[in-house]
Amino acid sequence: MDLSTAKYRITYEAFSKFSASISKAKNLDQLIAIVHKKSKYLFDSKLFRTIVCKEDIVHSFTFIPEQAVQQEGADTLYPYERKLLIDRIPFCNTLDTFLFDEFLSCDRVINPRLWGWHFQYNDLQVCVSVLSDDTKRFVSNDIEILHLVVDTVITKFQEIQFKSELKHKNKNLQEALLLIEKKNEQINQIVDNQKAIIEARTKEIRGKNDKLLEISKMNAHNVREPLSRILGIVDIIDHLSTEELHGEVLDYLKDSAQDLDLTLKQIIAMSAAEIDKFGLE
Amino acid sequence: MIGPLEKAIQKLDIFLVDDQKITNFINKKLVSVTGIGKKVYDFVNPLNALKELEEKKPQLILLDLNMPEIDGWEFLEQMENYNTDAKVIIVTSSTSRLDVQKAKNYKRVIHYLTKPLSTGSIEELIQVYSAK
Image 1 (cartoon, rainbow over the protein chains, first blue to last red):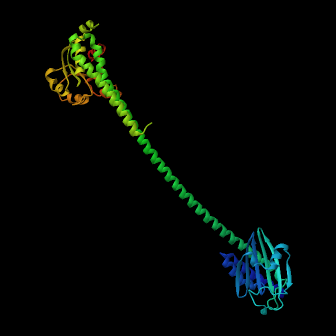
Image 2: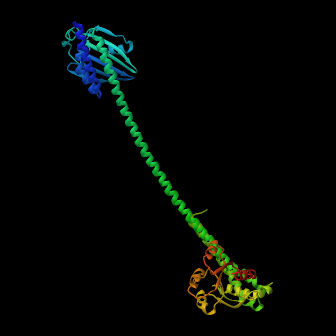
Image 3: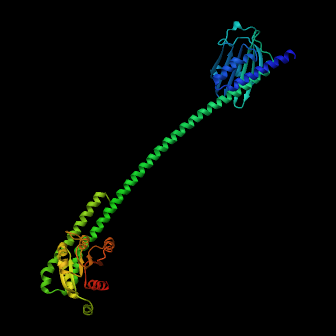
């Protein structure tokens, strides 16, 4: 086994461990921590940066040996990254001016070279850049493993984003369901109220009907009673003597006619009172 | 018209029970002109009629329903406490179907007539009585 084969084997073993760890990451913080901890076993660099753009949202992740820095927003992009996003042409340049003062001091970097690549994953645009120097040298042989790392990490990144979106959507859905349930409850309450009102109204109307029926029944009887007396007298009139006729019978006839008149007056008054009471038109 | 009927039927002792004096007067007149009555007693107070039931032993009672002291239904109930075979014909100004229906619950009640009675309705009640 020659040296380069041995190096490959070690590298791929490291990659397989890296990839196994990555697959266990549950969120973005864990993912960043694993990349920060394990990428140094896969390739050398002074600084390693990944930009992930989805539509207008920009995430940038910067890894130096001491720490991993996560930033958001288009203003975190370096000019070379803006250029990469447009022309998508990989590059390997020496640095005329040192760009990464916010992450590490330029004194600690000897003969820096900056590598850059652009990747497209569906709707994600990814820019990866590696700062190499004489102490931590990134070489062209490392490109292949770097691509593998980017593939693995971005796939995981998408999975995490997707899960978090799903969780968010689920939460929204849950809230919507709760809202619907609440509205349903309100609707049911309204329906119940309506039912109660209708029931009460129906009962009221039934009561009125009963009352009116009773009045009409009573009226029929009360009117018929004196009327039947009058009719009865008229029917037997031929069989009466003149004395009977001019004596008590005529008085009965008068009384009965007056009773009939009184009853009719009472009925009219009672009907008017009931109409007022029920507020009927 | 009255003649043949008069011959065909037995004459009856009759109670007229109505709180209106005039109704009793009219009915008495009708019974008299149709000649179906042997003895005819009229009562304005139905309680008095009950008291006389066992002594006078009427075969037929013409009974009003709407009366102040006790109504016709109560009268029918109380009749059960007396030793009497009297049949009852309800004579009322009520045309309510409920009352007609209720009257069918009493075996004693053989007919239901609406006021006012006429010579025609007296003939009708005699036919009904004879058929019983």
